[in-house]
Length: 207
Image (cartoon, rainbow, N blue to C red; front, side, top):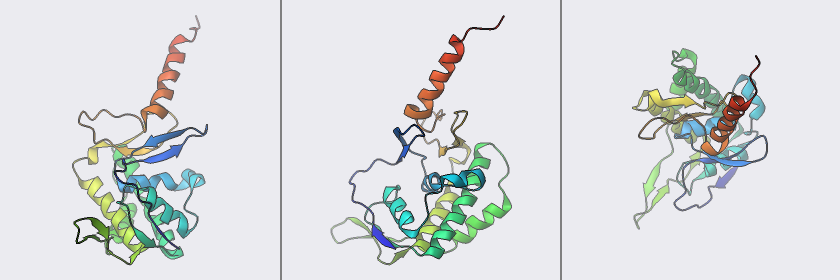
């Protein structure tokens, strides 16, 4: 299945997600590999799976922080390999967020995926950026895996966090200067948790 990423000049990084109540909100996880985690995950997160066919992965590339104009072809096998990578990055990010050792088996999956050739950018005669032709799901796989390696070994590795809401497991990297980001999105979990705390303070105390 193939498709072209939509043209969205000056696009703000991040994804538009929809809450269980049907309200749309903007979530910027701060890294390409963490954007992939919004498509599903291992274990209990499998119920959120949205990458059911190659076209779904093509659509995700158009929504992701990858630059526009990517014309990519994805096979069923490549889709499965991307899902496997995602399901390895998910626990690695959670381990980073909670200060746990990184799982060796999950690292092996990421390292193997990163060993292949990534997506290739090019510069056009007019000075604009474009993608080299022939992009495949395998190239995307390597690009996402390399992004994960850069994140987990880079200067913001200690800032990979899980949303502070009691029932939200979205993972993000806090790249803000003060480094005090707590929520996936202030307009979603931030406001919900503030309202929850307010109700708790206002509730009558039992003698």
